[in-house]
Image 1 (cartoon, helix red, strand yellow):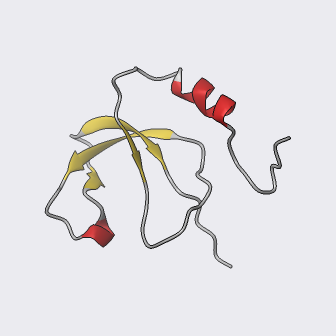
Image 2 (image 1 turned 180 degrees about the horizontal axis):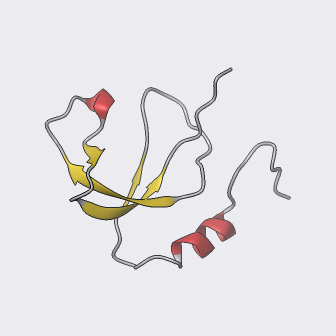
Length: 79
């Protein structure tokens, strides 16, 4: 049974979310440092690829003239 206090999304819920988007739409995740976190509700943004960026800045950045991608952004905790 799903524990909403621990996990934000189940596999079934993620499948339903993904079905709402084109099958060829890229998916990226936010990241930094170690460990794993829940993610917020996925959303679509325009990004550009910047492979020369340092690893802590990520190889993708928001860009209104970029390509649409589905983003799984990690939950940020302030505890």
